[in-house]
Length: 241
Image (cartoon, rainbow, N blue to C red; front, side, top):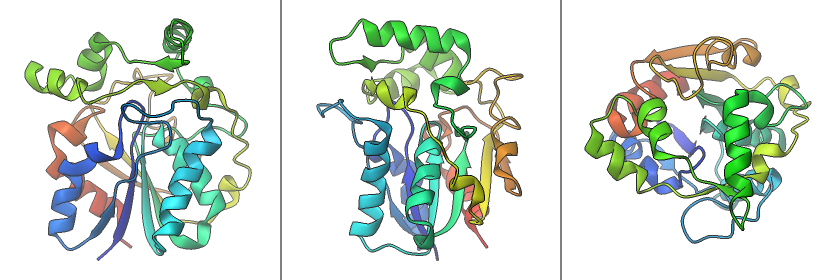
């Protein structure tokens, strides 16, 4: 049995993994779903990327976890890459699920299409706390297009504004690209949160991992809501030795 730490993406919090964590736990695995600093409703959004990383490092160290399979979804990929630099000896494998794998020295904004970058900058500038709320039409059509409307609406209500500064913070990642921790990439084949082609997830992001295991499944960027049981199966496939 494995110990999984699942790191959510933007606009999410750790509790939203429950549909995936439940079948993993039922199979005997240990599953942790911490919330990244600055994420969730009613919390302080004045965080930088290092705060996001520290919150996951603190959880793993505070719980004295070892031999961890660490998964990051979307923005969470930038977090687990940095966590791996800080506590490599506690990790058995890294899994990037339709996740950002930034090139050395880049920030998340550098890895997103110009139209998203411009929109997010405008949205952040319109707030008094430098946050971004994903517009529902983008959620519906690009993030969770495989869901019925009712599920798209109910899950959207669970999201919360995203702190903008972690999108802008440059990540050197010099140590990450030297690590020998095994890594996997899970690709949901209908994920168009990043538009396919020049800006797509796979193979643009996955190819940066060097030698890696590729695991694929049908579904959108939010298959954690639309088919959590299948995603749990694929996490086991991606995380096994």
